[in-house]
Image 1: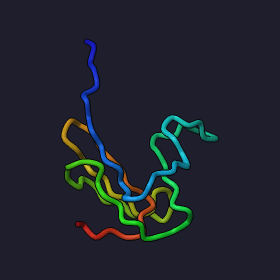
Image 2: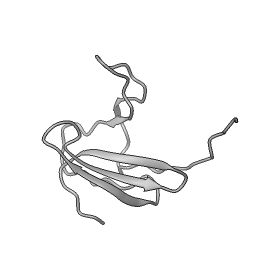
Image 3: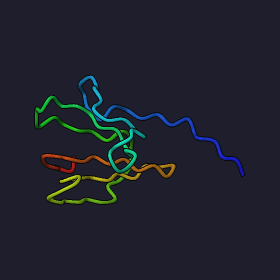
Length: 91
């Protein structure tokens, strides 16, 4: 069976211009990177918005790795992950 991607539209998770510090599939020392990383120029507190409508499916807090992370499931089977968050407010 051959499946084709839908024409899915996502918006930017930030209201500022995006500058990437890591790209999908980028070779890391022991794995391929499975996401994109956005530079914040070491500034904290930037508001992050969902890239599309969906619902929060998971909240994870860890002292390592992603730190504070929010997972949003979107229609069509997509999940977006927002990691290294300073805080979450549920709006």
